[in-house]
Amino acid sequence: MVGEGGSRAGGDRESEFVGVGGWWWSDQMSGGDGCRLMEAEYVRRHHRHEPRDNQCSSTLVKHIKAPVHLVWSLVRRFDQPQKYKPFVSRCVVQGDLEVGSVREVNVKSGLPATTSTERLELLDDNEHVLSVKIVGGDHRLRNYSSIITVHPEVIDGRPGTLVIESFVVDVPDGNTKDETCYFVEALIKCNLKSLADVSERLAVQNTQPISNTGFDEASAAMRAATR
Image (cartoon, rainbow, N blue to C red; front, side):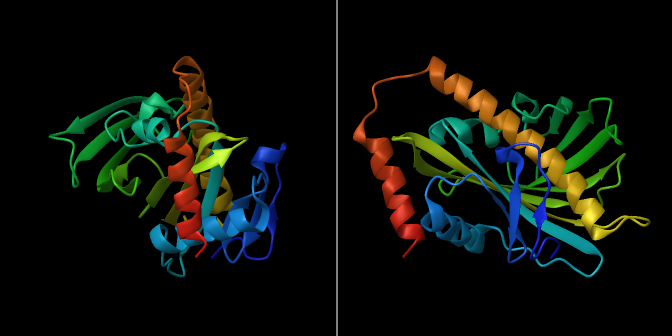
């Protein structure tokens, strides 16, 4: 895997990622080693990729100050990725929204792509897992598959969400694994930052008295992941 034993350069703390065992961990941790163990367990459960020699793979994380149900309500919308993805201008889904559904995505100018055809591989509302595979389009991301999961946690004493996104993709001719991973990671970081911005803004608008339920769910998830 690309990224073992190194780190990516980043401008601010939230964009810094540290390579651990082939995964890229956000340097902004709310719980030290315990938090890293929890993230590693989530990756082990849901983000298993087996990249071939001509592929690269990476995993990124983001902590969002919004409850998990709110973040998931945005992530799960395979039919409306533009709700938080800044590079998507239009999306049309063929047929009903279910596993196997295909969407045609139009990409905004400024990227080396115009369209992307993507298939829904997995949508699990219980485990909060979304998996998508690119099956066509005008771009260079061949055999691209991604998995994104969201998990409850506590941030600054309030219900928050840990988001993990991983991918595997072919390395285009003329590019290195590092170059390919750097490009895809940059796109994902933008998407995750936008997801955080939208979620946290909605969380402020929908602020209600906090019940113990959010804390209990987050605490239970953290205990289960670190057993």
